[in-house]
Length: 227
Length: 281
Ligand SMILES: Nc1ncnc2c1ncn2[C@@H]1O[C@H](COP(=O)(O)OP(=O)(O)OP(=O)(O)O)[C@@H](O)[C@H]1O
Ligand SMILES: [Mg+2]
Image 1 (tube, rainbow over the protein chains, first blue to last red):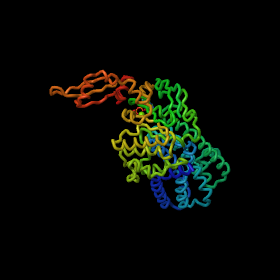
Image 2 (cartoon, each protein chain N blue to C red):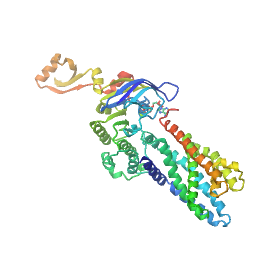
Image 3 (tube, rainbow over the protein chains, first blue to last red):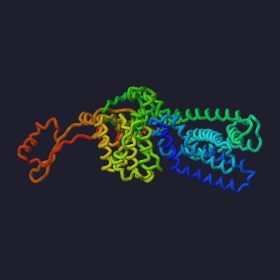
Image 4 (cartoon, each protein chain N blue to C red):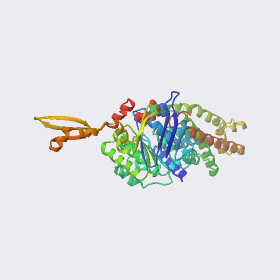
């Protein structure tokens, strides 16, 4: 009941605050880039776009959403309502994950990446959850949008660089300790899919639990008292 | 309903809320009256579980508020002193969303009507005036019919007629048996609405009683009257308890010569200054 209410609330919020519009603009832009490329490049570039836009942008958008909520003091209302922190986190991850997955599906179709749709959806969704979780944690730890943006830069590098290196051929098995590389391996349908799935699941679940913990702590500071 | 014992809390290392003790009974309107910065909102945040790092005991509905029962938040309603609304959603969408978080909710239309927002319910909150936001914030705390209501300055920023609307709704809630904690720095509101008020200054309670008792206890009640004699208007004052000794008054009454007569008691503002050495506003 409450989970559903939160989920639809988040979707409405994302719609009204222009996140769907932003994603649409990005998708169109990326589709245009894909169209202009020689077809031999398409799958690889499409992969990078799938990774960077819906998955990794989630980090940034999630942070923006929470900064907006902070600014409007609606989190105070939520924290004196029956909503629990895990419900809050879950709803945010699912709503943004849905959006990311839809966009990724468009890009993958255009880039001829979509041989195994179910598999693809799962991977992108898990990836989105990972990045959104990180964005959420950073957002709860920073005061202003500017601070948040500054704090995400090193994070984006840590997430994106190894993944790009992986696609470009630097694919030592130990790289699969990195969730970004796992996503690439899984989208590529590589030879180490089992390992990559395990590692990705571990990251997704671990970060989800950590985020719940961090958000719980964050909610308990909304009254202004230090922990 | 609420029991607070030896409450201490501070945002910083400097002590702030110190040794507070009070109880709120079921069905009453309990007011916190005090100047800006006294700690009224802080106490409300502690009572609603938003601040968990206090010392002492704070029992709300017989349970330490730090460790609330899982249905606790179904039963309390909180109106913050600041708007707590999604600016880009309409008033109706805001209400609908917050209502959807509860098991039980009231129909929204009558609620919107009750504070005169029905015709503007489809406007975005960003386009609302301060007073409209404040009214919406207020009814938002009522959507789930809470047994216990926390209202932080619900009438601040409202024009007199809207303040009247809100005050009537508060009284209506009381008539339904709800318990209400009301924070204000308006002594007229406190006198009118509250069964009991706590005067709070610099984080501690300086007095706690019904407005009437606070006034009566201090109030040297006086009657002042005016009359005409030799073409001039005169005024005299006499203590209410000694009217029988005032021969002039007796005579004027017998002869129907009084021009005016009224009793004057101090108001809560005067009492507040007298007890705490501070002005309210
Ligand atoms: N989030 C916070 N962090 C640190 N200090 C705070 C915080 N909120 C309030 N304070 C401090 O606590 C004191 C009491 O604030 P509080 O909001 O409880 O006052 P109040 O009685 O509600 O005043 P007002 O009538 O202006 O609303 C003030 O000195 C304020 O600076
Ligand atoms: Mg206040």
